[in-house]
Image 1 (cartoon, one colour):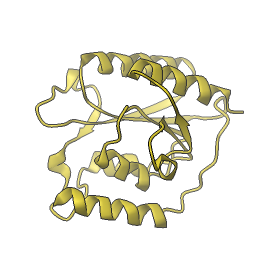
Image 2: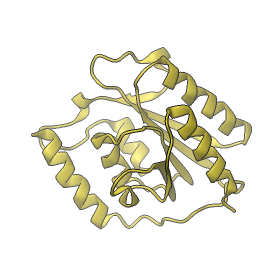
Image 3: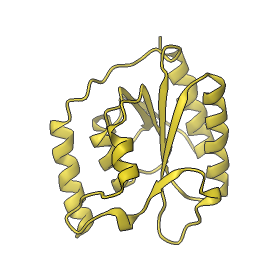
Length: 168
């Protein structure tokens, strides 16, 4: 029931969010957001390596993870939210998640292979200029740059970085 309310609210956000979307040149970009669903230690390692690469490019990075039930939060290194932060009426109540969605990132990288309804809600609410993630049906409502044909998280991250750095 909560997820039905969430999907309804997400669709409404997609229609009314008037955030300025524009491909920023990667070299000029200063702020980067990363959002993903916690899955396993391998994905955690991939995200940490991606952060190192972005830091070497002198980007200010903010990370938010969705922590599903019965998953470990490796190192407690990043801000996170859970399904407990979803009210009966489909509102996300986590202050970390709400602040993240309001941040005007130059780039927001969504590092999941399959769409997550809670993260899609935050993407719909997002003030980011350029949202980047894996291609999925109707993804153009959530992402300005979609990466197609990736088999795993490492390939997704590599391709997101490759194409984002080519933007001028």
